Length: 254
Image (cartoon, rainbow, N blue to C red; front, side, top):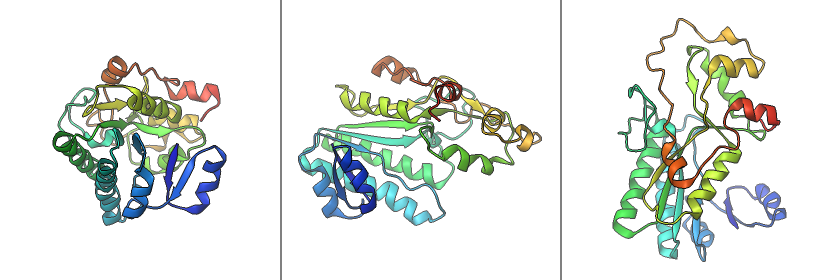
């Protein structure tokens, strides 16, 4: 396994696990070439979504993804797995969203992910890039501070608002299945667990007052952010190791 990381201090821990590590950046063409030369499969996990630098979000998520894809094509990479987000869908379906639904991203981060998806699909159609796209739910687990950082931002949300989540172990499972499965170039898969969680439940399980969210806030679309996961189950055999946040909590892997 070969990894591209941005900071040298990140490299040693990965080397101890047996990986080859290249220090570089999506904006540095020479590091991209070094990263993909001689590689069969690229798994693209990089993204910029924390912060307010809109231009950096765009250049990292759109231009960076396209640069890595073009370097992969030049190097003869066979499969290119791209991680996107369920936020690309937006609200308004009145049901769980499916992979073929029209995208309506409402903010910069999902807009840039949607644009990257479109560019990669064009490379699949025109140049044969073996792209597979995974649209992840709200990722958590294994010490990730994502939930703790996110909950304080939801004070004005209705407590019944639900998040469709996915544990790190199940992201890994989905990635491995996308890497290993033949005949799925150009396909898109939603990745999430079996049981979306309400804000009230998440707040309670994280030691916060359940009523801190605004019960008077509108809950215009109770299906916003909830995805249909039949395709990944039927085509890739995906079954969550942790089918709910409760299951991950009981297993001690939050």
